[in-house]
Image (cartoon, rainbow, N blue to C red):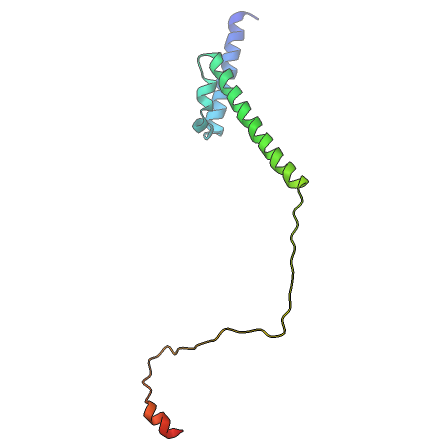
Length: 111
């Protein structure tokens, strides 16, 4: 194998990965993955993947701490039920929905 065929195979693999990511995962473009994979300088890729790895590790550590705290610190609820002999109910006023004129003098005569 000569140097040019190895180089063309690497280019072919890079193009295949780029095309696969672009067609199958278009949402990755919003994250800047395509820009990073096609970056001109390798230090940029290393920096980007390092920052991404640190953020991922911080997220996993936070999830671990939350689950660990949930398991280690039990919570208790105390419920007291008290019965009473008499239960005072609120006063209830029923208002009719239709307006009715009441003649009080006529009501007094009927009583």
